[in-house]
Amino acid sequence: MALQQPLLGDRNTGGSEDTSSSNNNNSRSYGSLGNENSPRYTSDSAPEVQRLSSTTETFFHIVCITAGTGILQLPYALKTGGWAGLAFIALAGAVSAYTGKILIQCLYYKHGVRLQSYSDVAKAAFGSRGRLIVRSLKDFNLLGVVGIYIILAGISIDSLVIGTPVGQLGEQFWIAMSAFAVWIAIVAARQIHDVFVLSVFGTLTTVVMVVIVVWLGIGDSGFIDTRPPTKLINIRTTPISLASICFSFGGNLNWPELEASMKSPKKWSKALSLATAFIAFIYASVAAVGYGVYGDNVRSPIFLSLPPGIAVVTAKAMITAHVLLACPILLTAVFMEAERDLGISAGALGATKEWLYRAAFRTVLMLAITFAALFVSDFSKVVPILGAIAASMVVFVIPVACYIRLFYQQRHFSRYELAWSGLIVCIGLLCLVIGTMQALADL
Image 1 (cartoon, rainbow, N blue to C red):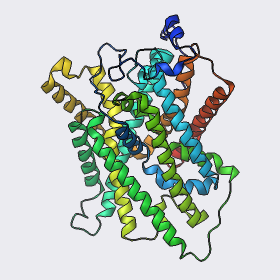
Image 2 (tube, rainbow, N blue to C red; image 1 turned 120 degrees about the vertical axis):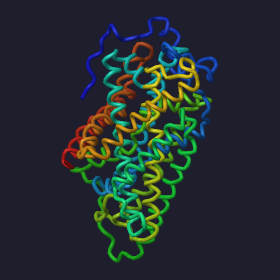
Image 3 (tube, rainbow, N blue to C red; image 1 turned 180 degrees about the vertical axis):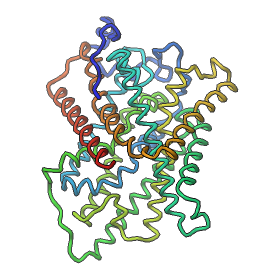
Image 4 (cartoon, one colour; image 1 turned 135 degrees about the vertical axis):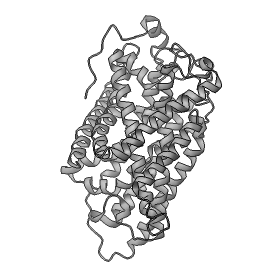
């Protein structure tokens, strides 16, 4: 699916006065709103999000959202593309950081004013149709990912409790319990800052899992008599490797909400760069050890290649905990925007009514996700197909398109920047094609 042609009548270019204030100083409009803790928003009603999150909190949020189950298939991605896959990890990290930064810059394309959401950026760039497309892709992708995470968590828990007194309860029961745990978190938390503890534990579970995988892999290398073969690069399957790695860096759908919660929004780029570098490091560690030890015999997920035992069980428990802890954070981008549209705010309803309306709305959505996870037989097969389309567009292609569309009258784009933007769009389209083909092949 591609963006429709912009409706010039719907586009809000900001006029000549914005150009004069921003020309040749684009960075001044980003996060420099006079009082950075009290930005002015373009909306009929200002959001009730308080800027309470520190740079450290934002770092943990980014890592928890991004570094998910995709890390387990990275050694296999190196098998697909060869050792060149390590360079792809660096490239994907650079692309992810860049699109995350320019997306936030788009929020401030009008000097002194901040748009509220990714959807608002799309509307400013491409009109109401652009907003509808991005909103649909974003919400479907996030809700679908949460549904898949709940299914994976339920299946994983069921496999972990085999042989215990609760081992006969079955996958459906644990899927329902996983959804219940997510529901408790999203009803209790009002905004991003409230789920900081979940992000910390989600990040820690990932780190523990990475340490276990690297430790087991290095330890197992001493028991392998003949080192399996590896390749420097596999030209034929390199595009598949690149697409798989790029999908592991998808996460910028939540960035506007994360930046809106920061005490110092000017530090967004710093937080994103540090978090992306950390994610790239742990990705490269798992990928290099997994492929270096098991070579072309490596399997996906990497757990299937590791020696069985309590360490692998612990690593599986860690990744299960991570996906559950990430779910409430992923859902905030959907809930907060929808609640603004529905007028669910303490200012309009009062504190008690606001909580009741918010809890009811989030409960209805969670029931819908849970129903789909439990009873829609092809849910886990259909979501990856549409998710490949949605993620490819909203993570890679659309941020670049919006950035150029909003700023082309305000600044000069160098040939190198345009070439880099073109490369990102090509990568996004490559991910779209390959991701869709792989998802269809899994049906």
